Length: 305
Image 1 (tube, helix red, strand yellow):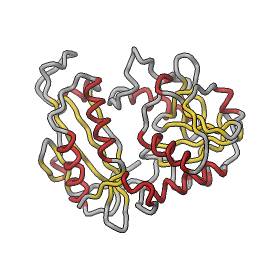
Image 2 (spheres, rainbow, N blue to C red):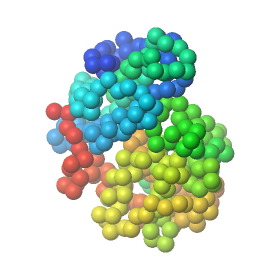
Image 3 (cartoon, rainbow, N blue to C red):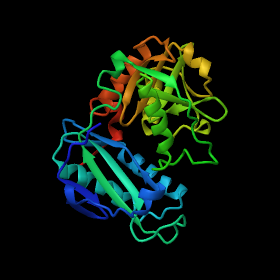
Image 4 (cartoon, rainbow, N blue to C red):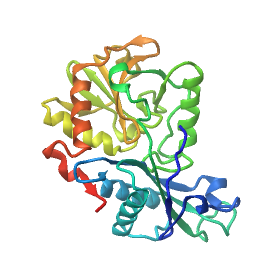
């Protein structure tokens, strides 16, 4: 998806011009993938731009760095304020936000202990990752031939730059085969997640979502959707999901910061009822919550001013 430029990018404590936010070709993370990032959205509300669950996102950002033993040179409070400042600098009513921590220029080799951590935050306008009509139209998915990382190979709990090669391979494979997205299985054959979204499956009226032990990222949107679903009266369980469960599901939907909430219309060419009533209800409530239109979830919003 193309990037639209905005005026400034936050780099190591300073807002710099978009075109001057540059790194050296020998930047360590560019070679070894040893960086962490987040994906966050700011939404247009009646009170101005509001960042959705900002503090939780930045805490996960810090946690990802901890898992990599990457020193984080800024506190949670400093990072939260940096995001707000960057969003405000764009002048946009709504935008996508990408914080990135990476090892910069000065060292080469696999030993990261001498490396210095640099932090950047960029914002730009970005539509729904799976399409603006993903709820009603649904997306076609296939089971990927690529397996999600084992916990002792690459830590799936960390939103790590290098981890997403695995996701990219699965995504491109699905697109080239004529599908919209891929579902990735854990090494034991159970469902983990999509390439960039958590997955929910409805069986016998109960909403199931895979556990982190299956290799799923502990999603902030996943957590939000779980609370919304329960508030709407649905039972939600974190449980193992087999590949065959997908083929006989009553509904399937995916969620993530970039994707928001989207229906799944088929898996491996097996049709799935789409959009289902549960998916519609959750997607509608979520869309209101992120825009400050549902008083039950106003604590999820952090305003830039």
